[in-house]
Structure formats: structure tokens, C-alpha cells
Amino acid sequence: MTSPLQDAGPQDAIAARYGRTPGNRARDRRLIWLAAAAFAVVFIAWVVWAGLDGSRPSIESRNTAHEIVDDTMVSVSFEVTGPQDTPMACSVQALNEQFAVVGWKVVELPPSDQRTRTFTESVRTTELSNTGVVDTCWVVERRS
Image (cartoon, rainbow, N blue to C red; front, top):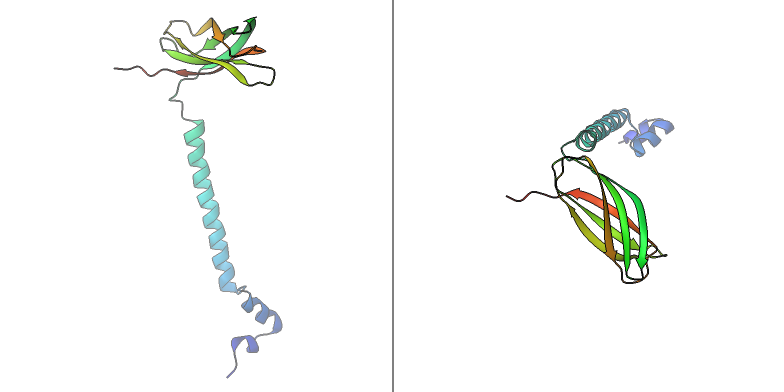
């Protein structure tokens, strides 16, 4: 009794040994198309979720000035642009020469009919600071 590998030519025997028969090639193509389709579905879902979701209000903050008051205090001036009539909060930081945080404070900003507002806050420090910055701002959830 002869095996299929012996009946086939040398190229066919090698192809059969390593799974490169015509039936396997069709299956491989189907798997590639299936993987490409799955990738496309995941990518489109991510674009819709990340790029088109406009339900969260946009808040922008900008540092405008800082003044080192003394070894334990820095004054930070900043501008916040956000939704009108919405309470917000910002974290303000004092940094030393190595950019380590040496003072930190959360400032609550009351609702206002103005979209862009300017604030100046004093931040206590544990050592002499080199600068003061507004780090991040967010919408404060209203409590019922």
C-alpha cells in the first residue's frame, strides 16, 4: 500500500507535509478576510465611541502667570473656558526646580454665565517653589 505522499511529486509531497494544499489555502484566505472584517468592525466602533461622543462638556485651562510670594506660598493666575452655568473645579499645583509637586490645591469654580473666566489662587507649599500651574479642570456633578 502506498501513501499519498509517495504518489505525489516532490513539490506536492512537501506542500502536503507543511499544510499547503489547495484546500488549506482557501481556508487561510477565509481566515484572513475574517480577521480583516473583525478589525474593521472594532476600529469603526472605536472611532464612533471616542471621536463622535460629544456628551461630555469640553473644558480648557491656560496658565497666565505665577508669582513666588515666599518660601511657603505661590500665587497662580489661570484662565478657564467651559460650559456656562456649570460648576467646575481645577487642581492647581506648585512645582519645584525638579518639577516635583510641593503644593497642591483643588479650587471649586461656581457656575457663571461667562464661558471664559480668569482666576488667581494662592497655593501653600512645603518648600520654595519654582512655578505654579493649573493642572486639570473638570465639571463638578450637581448633587440632588
